[in-house]
Image 1 (cartoon, protein in one colour):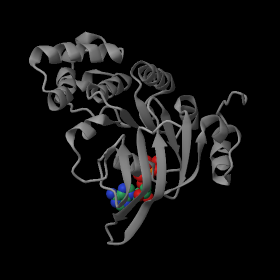
Image 2 (cartoon, helix red, strand yellow; image 1 turned 90 degrees about the horizontal axis):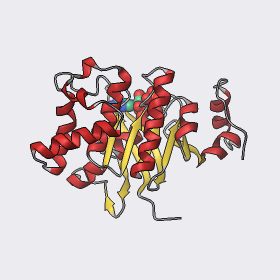
Image 3 (cartoon, helix red, strand yellow; image 1 turned 135 degrees about the vertical axis):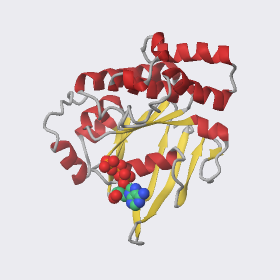
Image 4 (cartoon, rainbow, N blue to C red; image 1 turned 90 degrees about the vertical axis):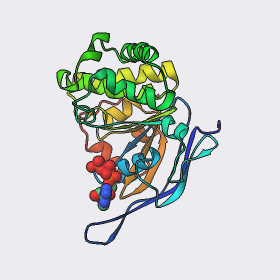
Length: 260
Ligand SMILES: Nc1ncnc2c1ncn2[C@@H]1O[C@H](COP(=O)(O)OP(=O)(O)OP(=O)(O)O)[C@@H](O)[C@H]1O
């Protein structure tokens, strides 16, 4: 196996609840992600998926454990800018994740200024390229998020993540707020971008069909722990854990092509 791009070992997250009690939301979670690979995370609501994703993206501190991107440790609370840039996040709700008072141009320009200190002209052409990358007309840069559909807003969210030229994009339910047709288009876009740019995805979704269609490997979480991890076809066609079997059985409309 190649040296993984991202390696998480023994991740734990304990939240202090409002009542003052400690709650272990993630317990001893370890995984890796290769360059150009998608690792899907599935599990019922509250199993700790978003907590793992946010720890990886540096949005919340770890209680314990280590995360490394290449040779750089991400575990310290003060992350260096290059590491912050390298892991981007695409949110579930495409509309509310964009500042409604900013034009699309400004939303996409922000990471370009922050990470690359580009001048106005370079920013303009980079914004055009980013819109091309996500299949939006260049004229949309003069619009506000409120003038775009949910699917179009998610394309902007993806473009904003790409603007940082990340190695990893954490996709936290990026299609669950969208209807089925748009969902499929966004998944296709993400797959194409991965092929073009070699980016890796840590991909959370409730819909097992979504996970099946996009993930190379799948990690199944229950009550803060990993119960099973493996190649997507093995997880779906030959699940080893009862919990995984129950998840797959609970989705009658899943259409899994035969085992190859
Ligand atoms: N800030 C917080 N303070 C206390 N508990 C929290 C906090 N954030 C999350 N939790 C709890 O941690 C557990 C894991 O939450 P998390 O959001 O990671 O789960 P999830 O698998 O992503 O769920 P969903 O699929 O519903 O988004 C849940 O029981 C949740 O209530």
